[in-house]
Structures are given as C-alpha cells and as structure tokens.
Image (tube, rainbow, N blue to C red; front, side):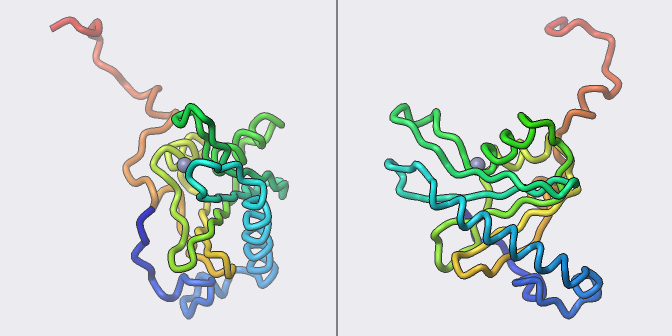
Length: 170
Ligand SMILES: [Zn+2]
C-alpha cells in the first residue's frame, strides 16, 4: 500500500477544477454512498491472519452495486482481495460494465490503494472507469483504472497482429 501523490483538488471531490463541479451534485452524493457501502462491506472482512480489513463496492453502469471484502485462508496465498470479490460477484450475476469502484480500509492516514493484481483484474473490464480510494472518515481520492495501471495489457491485446512464427521456433 503506497500513499498516492495526491492532487489536493481531488481529495474529497472538493475540486476547484471545473471537472468535479460539472459532476452533478447527485453524482457526488453517489460517490459518497458508494464509499459508505465499501466501508460497510469492510465489516465482513475475514482476515484473521493479516488483521487488515478491506471493503469494496463496485457500481455498474446500470446502477447496481456489488460489495466485497477480503477473505483470507489458512493457506495464505489463497486469500482473495475485496475488489476481486466485488467484481466477481457482479460478473457472476451478468454485470460486466462498470462505472466505479470504491475501496475502504482501516488505515487512518492513508487512502487505501488496490494491489497490482486487483488493478489488472479491474482492467479486464476496461481501463476507463473510476476508482475511489478512501479513508475510514469517508474522505477519498478519485482516480481511474487507466491511471493506476498505465500501458496496461487487456483482452483486446490478445487480438492484435502477431508474427506468423511457431512459438519456440528460433
Ligand atoms: Zn488486491
């Protein structure tokens, strides 16, 4: 978890820049609600090993919200992050088009930042959607999947032109 370099105008969405003010007031309330939902989801975290609770709430383009929390395991590397659980719940119910995800933890001084694996997992469903990284007090930083994972590899890349060479033929 690194602390992102914050642009002050993005903290809490209280932006002096036009972009945030163009966002409808209702959208701001929507962000706050999504963050609140991710904070609530954190309460179900199963993390007896790390004692590091994480919650996530993903918002689909249809306006549906799916939540997740981290779920650890005695076989430690089987643990699953909150973000991946929230996204998987959505996908498993037919929703793949996402508008935003909010992430919450108990870190008091840092905005929770998704791990590299979750960034790639988000990227599977597009690079241009929003990520809200929050603190327990509800303050947050707004970013995007694309900003968190620049020059990413996604499903489209599998369709790109390839050389006509048999693998391992050198
Ligand atoms: Zn993760």
